[in-house]
Length: 103
Image 1 (cartoon, rainbow, N blue to C red):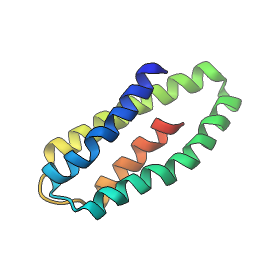
Image 2: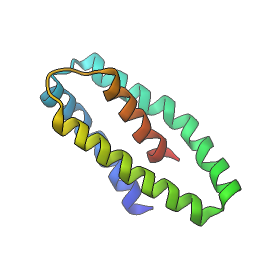
Image 3: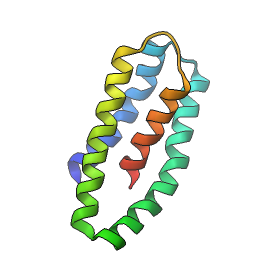
Image 4: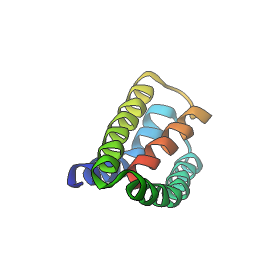
């Protein structure tokens, strides 16, 4: 859980810089991405609880940790190959990452 927490929270430190340097994003884009993280995060907490109740804590933890790694990896690959603008895909990937970060 420590590694999951560090991986998720570290991303916040770099999100604004990545958006502005890599995607030429405005402050409004960064704000929208953080809003998405917060809104999706509220639902993801509920998802994590339901998943734990249904699948058990070990299976739920494994699912969330693997999903978190895949989501961060996918977002990193996308951002590493994208320049110039923020797209809907950018926000969708941030939302998918947020599901696993907060589940």
